[in-house]
Image (cartoon, rainbow, N blue to C red; front, side, top):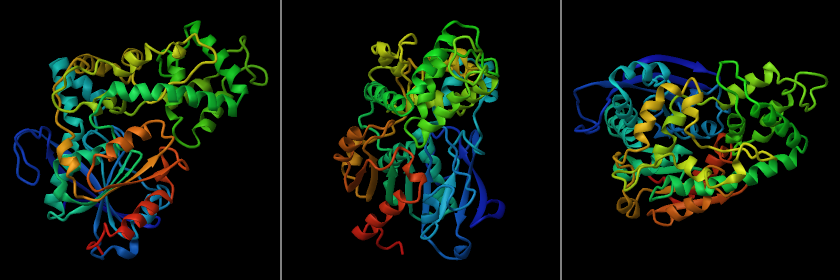
Length: 448
């Protein structure tokens, strides 16, 4: 393996590595040589200091997103599952292509590609979806880990990647764990948002019930914004729609509190109480900018994670089409409803960081040709043990749709709980519970 660095953080030994993978996997097979343009796939190997020289089985972490880099642990407890995993495994933390240190895609990259036109930009972005990500990981397994099978742990979008992995290369996996991340198969973006928007009404109601003073506060802020000419510190228009995006965090804990304290600093004059005569503070506008700005690939790829192979109809801004049928999300409705994890066309016009993506987005939203990410027949005959944590009240990935998919995936098991939100795996209990269930069932036999 190409070792870039070898060091410790408190309680962890860390190795940094990088290998080359094809930009375009067409015509190439993981584990073999390739020609043409390449990308760097960066990954870390993390172990407990007392296990550095032990021959432990491998666990590869499939990060959430899309567009999310692997965890940067401060110590074993900073991402709770790691503390449990390093007791049993050598943990592999890859940065998915286009994220972190794996040829990050951002505004600068898209601006450079603009010289070739929107089609070049669009075709480039399509190479950063699940079919390519999984082939990268399988190439890593076959080359740098000598073909040793590994266990996968998928968080959120990492669960989507898990089903892609089980569809394309099940022979590479001994067992899989997922947390809040079983997609509905067959995939349908409109169906996802038809479940999501009603849930956001409920989440917004719960937020106002917990912090009733914020009902008036949000209404007065929205009236300020509706009058126009308010900007965020980076120059983006500060609109009511941008304010509503604060709800995208409502599926995590303690998101209600995070949003409450952002709103607490909204008004400049007097004691900071809601006031139609007080300007909005610089601190508030800065906090909103940070809270509603996306990672570079997160919004551009958001709806295309539901694009599977040759599609009968284009995605065509699925979330916006569903929102258009929900007048309760209009900007003039009071109390104002927040929106969740959804992209809208205005984002690529108003947000400076997303504007270079707009020409490509306009093409991709009308595209019907994507790589195959799910093989329903293969999933039905799946033999790899799959243990899923399904959060009953999950705001982002509907639990009913998760259970429907799992009913048609061979050798799958699930644990349904309403004790955790979507980010439950970042605590110290979810992965431990899944691991012990799999161990007691014999799904990890032969690993230890």
